[in-house]
Length: 337
Image: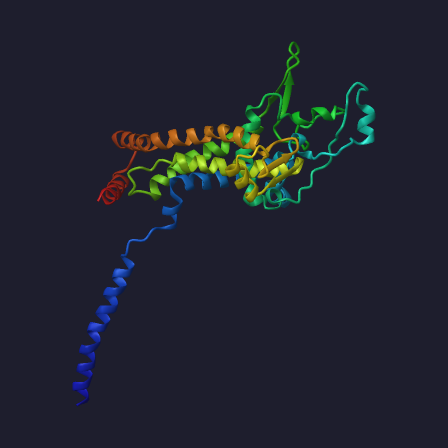
């Protein structure tokens, strides 16, 4: 009797197990998006730039301080402060300090001076997150602007020329003066290492990783629209932060709606008083940052055929072993299927 019951229980259990197995198989094979699918090729480029930028900050700070824990962990804070406090962003007071006032020529009509910046703000306190964003917006901007971005001056100089100089020591940055025109030009590898090299590394690494992560995609190029929106958002954040350092920014949604819909001559929605207007930084840096967008778009377009041609040439010249060639051919067949 017990044998019959065991047989019935076993037969009744088999369909239940098969239903569980089939349900699990259906659930595991259900098409879902990976996190990388949401990030996309554009997001991978930005992540590559983020890590490349942090890496170069650490390298440059080690060159400045030596190989220490402080040099590694303080690098993002140092460079975010360096760029955010650039020029007139040291702050503003109504009257310059007495020692500076005495050194100025009598014919200068001085109505304001400069004070040390307060670094208790989001972009410098959260430097490990925001420092690459600061370099992205302001790095190429200072490379292109003439008469700016010079190293910390030695000796006495007029604070009215404050906009020309960094206020901290900058490694691998120097300058020369043309004896005829008396025009200063920057020298050294600083801007290449801090601004250009992360962009180049992001293009190289991003395209390499994208080709291997998104094997099934036919179009692995970056999204120009997403890039433009990122440039706009980054420029707005940095411009707003620099504006609040040198003046007051007042933004009211109700005032903006009133200005738009009532055709008012008084702009009560957006008001700024200070040295650098956030809109100026936003517009100028937005156009300047078309440069990395164009570089990334062009490189992503030519990378896939370039890599394929290099591999084919290596196979034809016998650079690949037969075992490696068979493995690559097998992977290529899987991706095409």
